[in-house]
Length: 394
Image 1 (cartoon, helix red, strand yellow):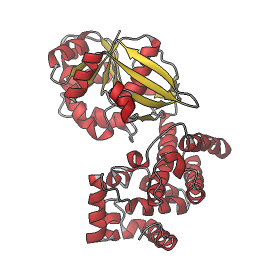
Image 2 (cartoon, one colour; image 1 turned 30 degrees about the horizontal axis):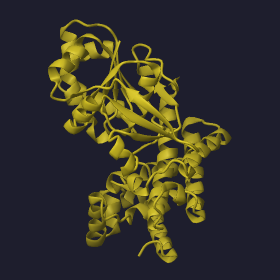
Image 3 (cartoon, one colour; image 1 turned 180 degrees about the vertical axis):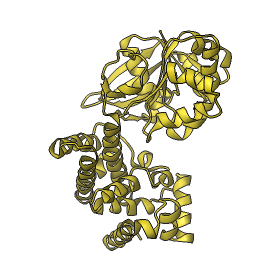
Image 4 (cartoon, one colour; image 1 turned 90 degrees about the horizontal axis):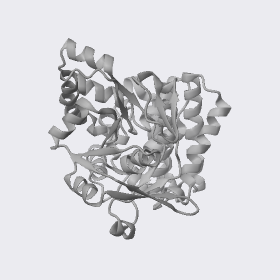
């Protein structure tokens, strides 16, 4: 068995790599950033700091990495020995990873390797396996597509462990160190795999994965967006501070209720059980030991205001199932006025707001249109005025 980990970022090192190391599986990173490849190969280890009332430290050892230009070695491995590839690169990079993977998988076909191969997406993104698979399959012949259909599984996981960059002092000692949440659950979509995956702590197969993924994304991500953007308006520094603010918490509880009722209507979840699930989200946000910055979570607001992302997406779902997204509209209003000088995307959003107005953002960023989305548009505008009256935005 040989395992590859495409991506060597915080989740790749601090969750998947950590789990593989704890289970005793040898693995190798494949990373685009040449400096990160060099560090991994020079140091051959990194520190995972598990945050809680006390900090537990694991030293992940016997680490190695290939860069994208090590195509010969990667091709030989994929065509012969590899049976599991984990992918954690950020959703916006998945199409390019598909382009990178395509010739490697076709090389596997040419060597007549019919052993099953699983590719596991470890992304905080909507339908990442479909996105990667579409990129791989583009332009394939019928014979090539049939080979992949039979022998390669593109499946998804739900990433619920937070991985955070440590302080400068910790990074001076170990530039590869990662701070992580003390959370070990890794749900995997069972239906898409071609064989059992490596036995990892917390790895659990899920049958109704679409419902599970919706539940996570529209609960955890909507809550995170709410706290991040409203907390930024109130000039907090840390997620846990903002999540304990009574006014923000009032909005957050509305978001949990709104998304909860819509998710239960869509997937048939028991409402009481689902609301218990929302407490796991709230506990994470309010965890003072998980030192996580609002700025990290709020950055890239144009993407996060997109029509299927963490705020507008669930708001539209709430309306679809007969609800009124008061809390989510407040969160969207806060996100539209996010202003962080160090974030170029936030400054781009600010320029759009000042020079083109709110209607332009709602139409061109949120993709909301008066003829189909009048209820949500009007509600967002009401919440903007409410936040102005409160002095949160000017």
